[in-house]
Image (cartoon, rainbow, N blue to C red; front, side):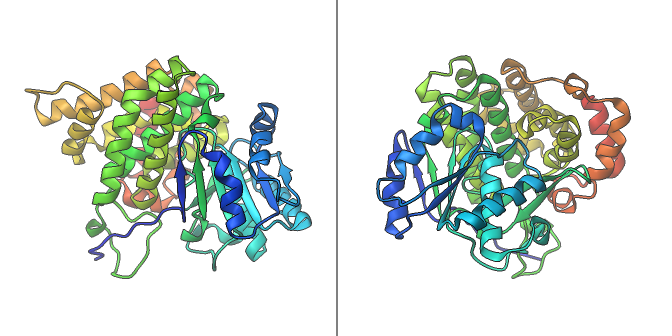
Length: 401
């Protein structure tokens, strides 16, 4: 039985409005002059890529931009980015955008350092050593990939999202500049914000390390609930409860944008040192098949999974209710726990996320396949507070349909 916890983060985290202007000074400290920026066409069209290129500084001899990233990037796109990197020979990889772009940058940094193909590194602790120096710069407030150890790609043949998890994938530098989120569309703000809320709630309600069948000294992809992750998750939940609806309603609200950027990064630190669980497991096959964003899928499923987990985490859910600003004075613990679920449903509804799987094009006959694929993701099953069966997963999906 493992009786301790540990904590990892990006090598350096810089946060604040305008902090992107420090990029040149940071990369030049290491005498790096040849960055490859992994991003997408939308950010190029919005002028954000141009701003980041300018921020690399006049001393940058050359800068290459790969702007063919996509939502939930495929293995094919990952190999295309790797080929560009091989030809350009960068000394720094910069992931600019949402989680998809940052995850693609992580895989590019990995392949450039160690060769091979993405599938050579699927799973936990398969990366043999440090990757090419990696900078992650989020332009959404949700995934926390700028501080996490995960890179998620899509295997279109199997219909599954596949993860590479390694401490070597934590960026050497994370630059979180809320100003870069100001042009984020309302629906992306909503979906990414619900993704961050999912990360924080799953981290806060995960199984404890002492409940896992793990020997001392054995590393885990997700180590489970611990005081540091709890503190980060609590702050993230409070910030999201106070600011997400405002950031969606009024995209020009700089305070709400800044607080959501902070919440997403805190939630990223919480889950990558704690856990995500069956919300993510259920979303992976659903997202591939229905082509919904990761945040949209997580936000849709979150309250249904909370109801399933509630019997094992009544006290934790009652605490989450308070974090979200619910009035629970005089209520029983169970009543307060129910309030947390109701509040999550209210936030989801108020920011415009779909209520049901059928609302995003899902069909009832697809649910069995989703359950069959989800149950195979053992690392996410094991860390969930209630150990689900395949039939349990199907019941959750039915309730969400």
